[in-house]
Amino acid sequence: MDINEKYGGIGIYVNLIDNVSIENCRIKNTLDTATKTDGCNNVTYMNCSCSFFGKDGIKIQSVNNTPIRNSHIINCSSTDKFEGRPDGKSGLGILGTWSGSVCGCVSDAKNKDIYVSKNWSDLRIGTLGYGNSRTIKISNNMLLCNSVELYISITGSLLIENNYFGGKGMINFSGKSAIVTNNTFYNKLISISSEVCLLSDNYINSVMEINDLYDVGRTIKSVFVKNNFIECLDDMLLNIRIGFKSVYFDNNYISHKDNTNKYLIRPRKQLNGIVFFNNNTIDSDNDITVISLGSSGQVGGFVAYRNISNFNIVFFQGQWPSEFVYKTDDTIIVENLSYVYKGNIVYTCDGKYLALGGNKYARINDYYFTDIANMKTNENLKDGFIGIDKTTNKVVWWNGTNWVDATGATV
Image (cartoon, rainbow, N blue to C red; front, top):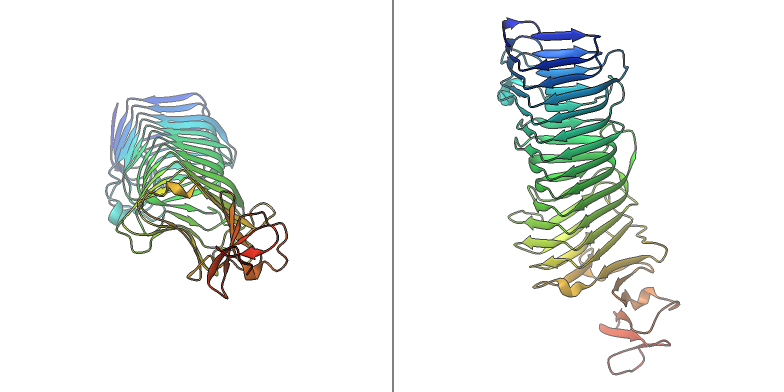
């Protein structure tokens, strides 16, 4: 079916009727939304296209803040938003649904640079005001807008797989849990607000950010970033702006070249979560800092092991946290450092190597490092504990009773 409104109202509109199937339609030149359903359960759009529309493309939405069920957009396209209207929210939209999917679709406003508002999204799922949404699958789509390619706010589970995001726009998603796998991201920013999120087996050319989509003071539980091929788009890889419990970087290939500030993770608040950085390969053209600390950005703990780099790895740099705790022993654990091929591991705090304040110390495998001036009582030290005596500028060892130098003389 071909529908050409010649800049009239809505192309196809269905209201408060269940079991709706709209297939094989081509809709264009609508001053308002190309096609939408209001308050309908069991809705499927299949093999439809909309173009030169004024407001929104294909939209399935609830009414009166009451969720609908089973909303699906399959093998559809939304392109060429009408130049005459700057409003509208999305090319494809499912708002307020319990279970739904968007699969095999293409969305590209094309007139985005001039005519699309900053709130425009290629694909928008479950925003507030339409009732809570849950259990959403986004797969095998191509989204190309350079404003916001994907905007998802749901209270349930989310699966994002096998998509191509190529418009240099933003990706925003939240939910109880999110699995993001086998996607290609060419974006300015991937903003993560899910309580638990797994990003695995993706190609990522973007900055990632852990953020609070609605700024209500939530704490993210865990973010897992593993088995990805990552090319840093900006000076940093991960920006943390919200409280979190744990972030895991595991088994990623990270290319971080031609950037001015060589750091990967930058906390922006006083945070208590632990960062785990394990089994990663870092391809850089200079020394690389894993975590950049500052007066306004700190973490609660850091664990790293078995990372590979072609230059020096600075695992943490900047102002030392006021309470830097891993487990109960104020330990920073960095293990198996021999995996650094050409570079070395560097600990810095305010520009000083191993300048660990208070009773803090670092452990490398079974060897512990500290400024011995910080160990007043020498309690709980094991044989072989390595220290730095800043009075003599010697490296010393704890032999079970005393600090001794390389000759065995007591310091």
